Amino acid sequence: MYLVQLTLAPSGDAHPPPEIKQALHDAAPDVVEHVSVHTQTRPHLVVSLFLRAASLDEAEAAAKRIWQHATTNCTPLAAWSLRRAEVPLHPYDVE
Image (cartoon, rainbow, N blue to C red):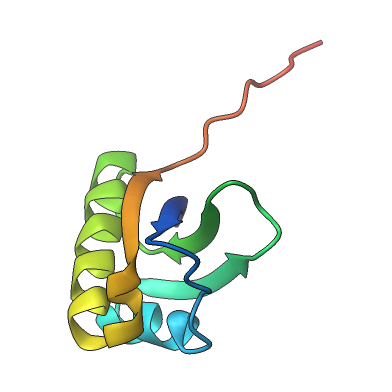
């Protein structure tokens, strides 16, 4: 399982639609385990997708496809553009 974060930018002053979580889950229910929307992030909205995938590259590619599918089926999401879809990499501190 991978955590992929979508970074989304609104067109104008669009607010995230209430159905964003469901739209993303419904885009690939066999892949999406959980969706979390971080509304306090600035300047862009961040959405975390927990995805079942075999590799990091596969997870990031799946997240992009999920976003595209969700925007096709959920009209309010068309007001948002995908800036990034990536697994956040954190340095591992070994002591």
